[in-house]
Image 1 (cartoon, rainbow, N blue to C red):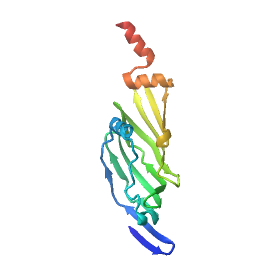
Image 2: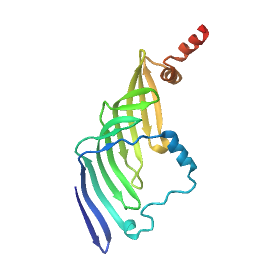
Image 3: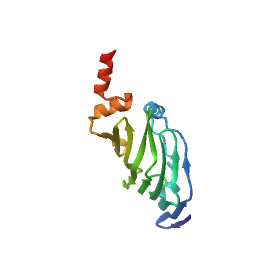
Image 4: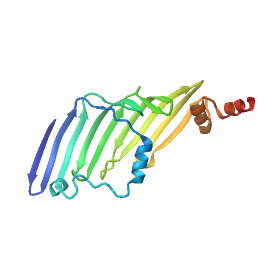
Length: 193
């Protein structure tokens, strides 16, 4: 990459392009541990650069691009993705613009079900903070049903919708994913016992 630091009467600016040739992220994600850690924290975590005048005044305009797909391989997914991002703001208050495109064929692991990714993109459009807007479409097959999973939204407002072919209601899809049977199939098996 090529970064240039300019300093004058108007302030400090770090500008340039960084090309990421390869990257692998393998750190597992533990949903319950992360949730309890978040709930248990009573005070906000201070910024590493908080109170540092130079970091507060260092404006950034850095383009970050991948030359080969970056790999995320952990307990919730195995995906390859390409990024074209702009790092803006200051070191104390960074923001991201741009997008990360997930290549088709990756996998998402939810419970005991593996979903194959059809498409995925993460947009960064909030100019004031790092806030990903996620759009992922994935599918899996259970018995004769192809189940579509659509994940959309920001982390504060993330939604997941399920649909199927042949068509089932969402409660039936959830039952099918959890037990391998629709609600009618579960009821019938209970009556047989």
